[in-house]
Image (cartoon, rainbow, N blue to C red; front, side, top):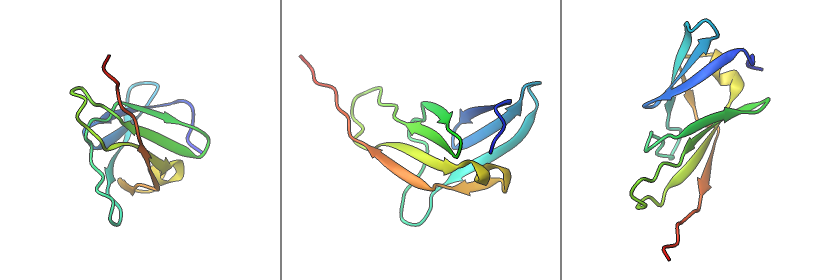
Length: 99
């Protein structure tokens, strides 16, 4: 399990992991796995529970995207290597209605 005393920051297709002193502990590239075409369309946020890290690829400034996703990654994968594969891709269906 990842310590709660770490900070994660998204930049491009990288997740940077910092300690509370601001030192980079690791930077990890999130890559596609199998047939999923995973890349950073517009990553907006990151959160975690006890077992997984969730990356929200939900940015849609112009309202034209129909491929909003949440990437689900096992936390243990972040301590193993400098790149990881997506464990689960959660498709998000969402639209704005103009009035």
